[in-house]
Length: 247
Image 1 (tube, rainbow, N blue to C red):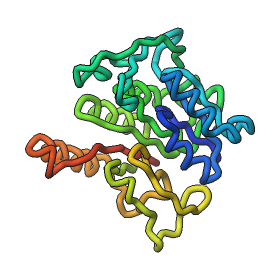
Image 2: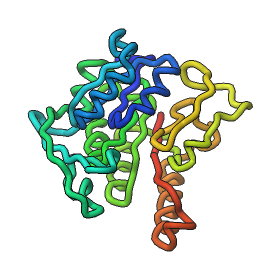
Image 3: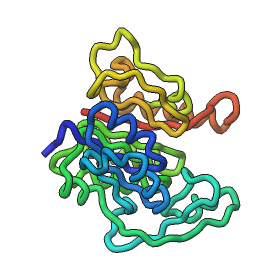
Image 4: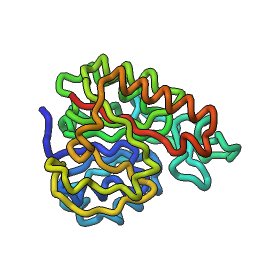
């Protein structure tokens, strides 16, 4: 069963995305593997947490059960990952913690299928994309942060799961992004919101309708972006991209 007022925030981090979703009137199930960030999140959203509008789980999203190792970057919390190489990609030494693992499918079984799922779990996003085909009810809207490592698998998994419309969003621009005044459709409450550098930004109906493209066109755009990034990462292809998908 799809819950139209529910959002999954997978990769809660500092909670800036959850803040946006709560202010728009949604309930949120958030997952974060870093125990310190969970503690800070419970304090930041104590009112919503006590009212059960926010469920914040100190777990790692995976395709396995039991416990999993999570590696915390010493300075850049957004670089922490279940992939040790990714967490230490700048030469830093990470701190290892063990946390319970939970799959995307089990989250849906326990809490219901969300209207939208934001997936930004540093190197493990593909595991979520691969689980979508096993769901009877799939989120009407979903997004993944993509990279050269996993973009092909995420694109193909979304297509296999039946998603037909796609939109690329450069997260670098989210801090200055505002919804168009001419836009008539939007998600939840129509609020004026200031995004931060850690925000994933708009989703679903809040995204520009004319930016939704076919699978082939979106993949073509991403490959051209990758080409420019290889040529000049500093000037021609700044930022990092989320891939949004819908039916």
